[in-house]
Amino acid sequence: MKNTLNLLLESKGINKSDFAREIGVTRQTVIRISNGSPPSLEIGLKIANYFQKDVRDIFFISSVKQSARKTKKELA
Image 1: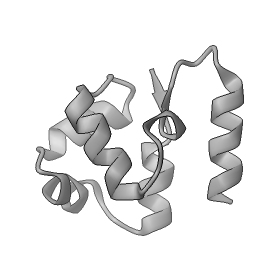
Image 2: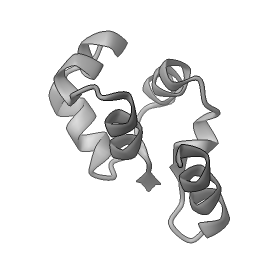
Image 3: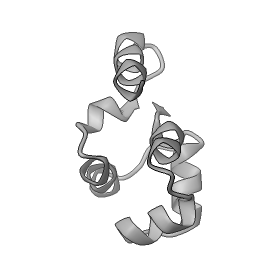
């Protein structure tokens, strides 16, 4: 599963440790997710809520390229 978590964190200027604390997970969990491991539904929703985005704008299947392009354009 692909995601834009690293881009979102960079755009907000927040590091993974602080972000993990904000959403109530470990830094290791954030690292695993940012490296492509799928989050649980609860954690995925917490991440989406934090960034005020639809979960589908953050997480997507790599074969669905349209969603990825849309998200990158929105970050610009």
